[in-house]
Length: 294
Image (cartoon, rainbow, N blue to C red; front, top):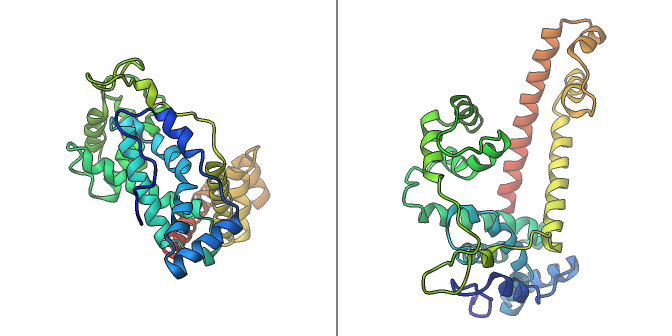
């Protein structure tokens, strides 16, 4: 699939101009997408493949912006995401009923993440799933824990993150130090010989149609996974888990112990066991789903 006719963002180029350019490509209805995918699958119609790729360039840009905190040029992140998008089109099977955006998100993120790991010379340990998970989730978890101060994190924060991501505390401390970098002024020039400023790399956070569609489909897919996983629980486990973790107003252990004529500790044990069973069932179903998409 040729890339020469796909817009690119050069280091000297303006992000806003690039976003304006890719917005010129029309969005596709589900029927249009299906017909184009079949044309590519059955006849290797490059024009059809080109339309599929270019109609999703806004999705690629949106995902790439989520990785701009790693100190790499946004243009390169977008370029790698576009490669992932083309791979997704090549492997997409429209007969399985998924929209291309939902399928392509896996390929776009994978391409960008692999590029970041290759580019970060300090991240030599990013070869295992757990270490990659640490690399790409540390900032998010720090934000959730409000650990926004510069320098090393408090020991309790390190312990919490290490537990959540199944890595050692030493790995968390080392990764945090490697990711630490000074903030740049938005008006600072990108390069000494360039008129472009950091603010040119900012993106409009307003969700586009393709991103909204993909996010809605992903949310609906998670709801289905949860619904199906709940069927693996018995009636008592399902009721206790729902009352304790899935209801707007949490039922107390005391109330449930009275309802089932068991101790509060026994209710807590059933809740924990049910939650573990639910997680296991959802992970297994998600893995099977991902394998079916490949």
